[in-house]
Image 1 (cartoon, rainbow, N blue to C red):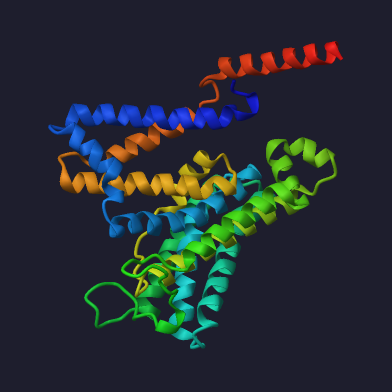
Image 2 (tube, one colour):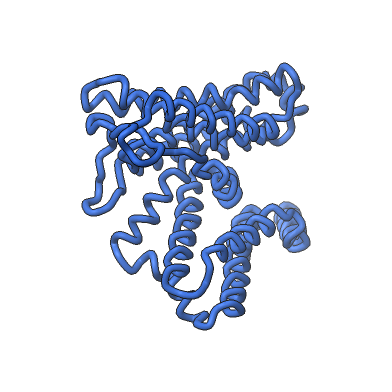
Length: 355
């Protein structure tokens, strides 16, 4: 029998199942070969080493931004600056790689750390504005993302640009700064291990440390945390600094592991995707890799389906939308949850009465 403590996991799994079923129904309505299309989407990523590697490659940046947003959202700070922090992290890594010669062992570490620090400073701006001016961190972070984009375009155009190339792109990154591939014939790089360690660190920080406990309590009930003697300003700043740092590290790792040049003339969208990953993982960094893998898998599967059948890849957007709506809808299965809680309370009373 399902316990109330397991209810959220059950509801998330049911939401995903319903979303997939509805998406498959849409495929049946729009496709002349619906069964083949669905099979391509489900089994396509497993059909070759290269295609499955694409799933892992897409999963890596989603883990970084997912952990970043999970930490910031746990403090009830709806900071959307992970997108800008990710972008600036990649930009700074490119600057360090191209303009600061170092030895091969030190170069990527320095680039990643400086990218992370830049992301932390960027994410802290909305927090500072909220503390001193009560400005909404949601609005300010959203606007700042575009400042990060255009700042990156300016630096790329006037300081990093390879004028011999036929597009807006930087010079080739030196080999000394690149992250090495760990699976031959693919672009899966050492950043995968860094991402997984980041998820473990995020879990230990949020659920096994005093500061993480303060952060979560502040996010659940700020007034209670304040009257309990917690420094809310410190909690807000630390959550945004740490979240921004992780997103910045993710941008640096993504550039150094997947690209030969910096050519990000537009936001890549991993910060926006992190909201989906955070929603699926229930703000628990330990579950972020699973959520990131799921999202990456259905996206690669949808891409394979769109290239080999008559179904558009936008079907994934439908799936994502349904999943999020069902998960965030607090009333979804709420009556069933109330019955679970009442049953457990009754059983506990009966047990105590028998003793």
